[in-house]
Length: 387
Image (cartoon, rainbow, N blue to C red):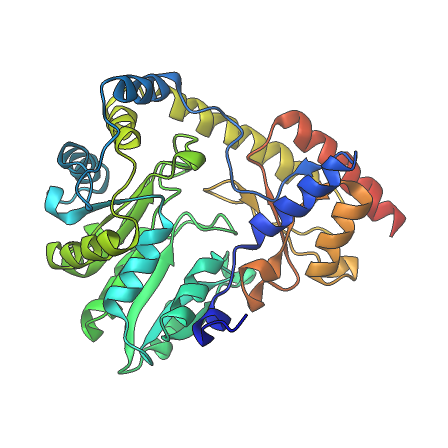
């Protein structure tokens, strides 16, 4: 089949490929501990499920505006104003089927061919993939372990050129679990304002923090008109399969993003949006319980991993991933991923799944049960002993 040339520019999210491979092995009878996929192992809270069922029974099964139901956009605006300390309205909100469309639509709306986008590496692979797909120039900024996987502000400034159109940041960060400080956000904001650059801030893990309160660059003076916030329901409310996300951005940009949504997916599932209202306005105790459990699992996994020879790990402060350095094991990241699956029955992700600078690392998700994490630690120890 003769395909369009642009498809060669499009990458993928390796987590789904590894998940598929693990499922194949499970179908053949092999037991696999899933530490590859960033999916909470909790069920969606009952109040949210009940709201969706009621919405279905009430007839919320038809088209709705491409930007989202007005009542949900108002609820999101109110929630963002409270959590980020800013002042936006429903006209600043676009609801999408998951968070990824906000990356896609923002880049399509803002970046011309040849214009540059700075993005974190290692980082969520879809950033680089979509930058390349829209024919922008992907400019990685390396997140270094010696800097706690935080952006180096001086390096960021050195990467700015007259062609820089957008900076992407992600805090709490996937795959490293690092969290940007208020001072770092102010420094990034100064660079963006000085050079007239937009910032896409991926805040999908904003509620999954262990030692600090979430801070958004949108709250820095002068940044509201040049910031796009990406957030959603998948991680916070264990709603990965519901495909419900949103972006918060200047109204002029929101209108264009809604137009892209019209052309791409028409609208986001209506009854899921009604459930989204309940998620943000209803009982939040399940969220607190999940975050407490994630923290417990982090501590168990981190403490256990640090005791296994060959793994050196930075303690994450948000999200639900460990990103240990594995160079002392004498294996490349992709080889370790393969051998862990085949020999230890552990599905994990090579650091290179998150960019070239991820070589020498591997990502484990602790969005799994404590029992499975303890089993994985035993298997990891046995695996290393046999190397």
